Amino acid sequence: MARATGTFEVKMSPQPPQDGVGDPTVGRMAIDKQFKGDMQGHGKGQMLAVGTPVDGSAGYVAMERVTARVHGRQGSFALQHTGTMNRGNPQLSVTIVPDSGTDALAGIAGSFSILVEHGAHSYVLDYTLPDEP
Image 1 (cartoon, rainbow, N blue to C red):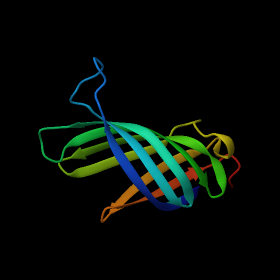
Image 2 (tube, rainbow, N blue to C red; image 1 turned 45 degrees about the vertical axis):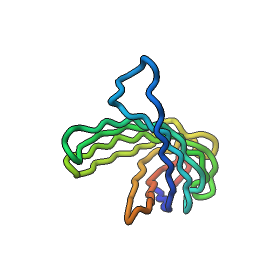
Image 3 (cartoon, rainbow, N blue to C red; image 1 turned 180 degrees about the vertical axis):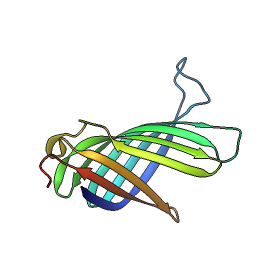
Image 4 (spheres, helix red, strand yellow; image 1 turned 60 degrees about the horizontal axis):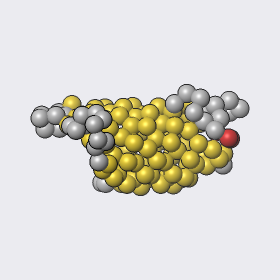
């Protein structure tokens, strides 16, 4: 298992509800990330989120396409996010979508962790590639 670490900046842009589609209580956001460190590139995606009447409780799902150079290998892959906040206790799982890797990242598998400290975002990408030892 290889590990890539670094920082990222994220811009979240609220998206208007689609006319006649879905529930207006489900928020929709566009995701735009810039990665630095062992993985250099960008991520773009969509997030759906729902809050609750209980303070500190919510849930979100997101799909993101990352186009980047990871330890010198250029390509892209998709990330699937699933997050909940249960009265202030966060739980987050971000997984590389199987068979979503392209070019030199074809066959990539693994997970992605997001860390937020003092408003700064960092990541840990634990991954395997078919020709990795």
